Amino acid sequence: MPSRTWSEERAELAAAIGANIRTVREERGLSLRYLALVVDIGSNAIWNIETGRSLPDTETLMRVAAVLDCKVEQLLPTDYRERLAPPPAVVDFLRRRAELPAAAAEGSRGTGQPSRRSSSRTTAADKAADRLLAQVESGKRKSSKRTSSGR
Image (tube, rainbow, N blue to C red):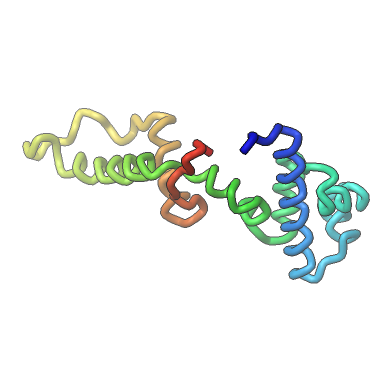
């Protein structure tokens, strides 16, 4: 099966996001004009997004999700949600890493002395890993296996 071009994939993504936006908007009982007004873009722009004629930028997608009171992930197609999820190996690593501070608080090598690494010296990478773990555990990011195509 020949692989899809970027423009074909982009068109499919735009159509799926637009359909999801329309579905959620209608579930909430909101008009297209109201959504456009609150998001602060033209109603033609919302119509183009909902019909898949244009792909919203990240900021617009975030504002639409906020107005619709849903997560941005809910507006994305399912296969994109799965692509955004961290691989299981990353989730396992983050869980093991989260257990380390508890062991360090008990002391280093069983001596009763605090470990050399101070919790006040948390690096940016540690903070990012903690945020990712919190997202995974709260369900914002769903852990799934990657497909054989690498997506």
